Image (cartoon, rainbow, N blue to C red; front, side):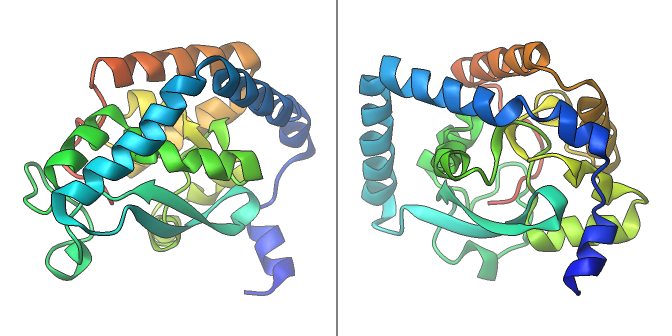
Length: 217
């Protein structure tokens, strides 16, 4: 697809761009403060989680995936690996409840969303932000665009580590995801972001993430 066609497909209204201006300074401020104030915790997570993953099966620590972000731009994210090596070759793309391909460490990481922690690197780069629509794998985004009218509209803003759909769309239904994401784009403001970040922290502390029957690696 030519660049002009991509720009036309993922058109971003000027009003949306204006309302989004606070997000990059907001993200950098929160990231800087949390890294400074919680440095011992970051060190523990960045050393302890990779060690546990490696000790379980001596496999790779990270999983790399191409995703589509704001305006249809593609980029790569890293996640902590939660499935056995070669899981994509021995089962479906989506996991199922009690999927045997998910490792013991992986189950804990998914329930706490700590498998997403390496995406902090993408936040520093600016590929994603703290709050916004979830950046989907490229094939998943394009497939849903073909089956759900207007699904590309969720890419009007920078994708986020957490968001309205991530917190409230427990079934991960694509149509509901779109409704939540468009609702967030319409309502986005710093106070809503703080509220969603707070709820996300509680979900991690209370091990409430990944209650869906299926989830991608």
